[in-house]
Image (cartoon, rainbow, N blue to C red; front, side, top):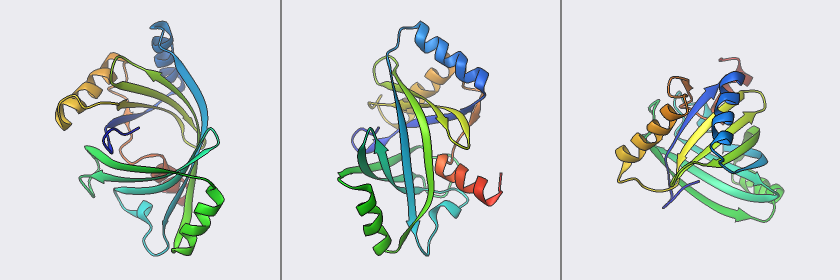
Length: 191
């Protein structure tokens, strides 16, 4: 979820035990959740596989959310580095996923990977959203995302790190490259 077309988030890979621990904390604190099954189809230019970059910095995907299809583009900053500070994010609802894939294929894009996950989303204090994801082929993750600006990039990221510490996940394995890269690497045998 972006605000002002900017997204600030931290993502960590969790063990099953860590995942259950965070879930207990969030449920104990009475945080309401909504659960959904999500599928994201990632496309890349035929002659420029963005996912093959050492540190991918852009995605194009068609997201299926509760039978709603969303064309999504993300551009991470800074480019070409392991740790991104934020990303520009642009979305538009499309009527038909199949037609959108055909249109993009006509423009020389190809489907690269499909990410399927079950996501539980919790509101956590004002301005922070927590998602617990179980990702097919990858396992358990947590995303901690700002839904508002806390006074610039550094202060917003500091707020997210404070929430990670509060939930006991700050020392977990960070994911800097994203689900599509991890699945792509798994397919290639690079993990």
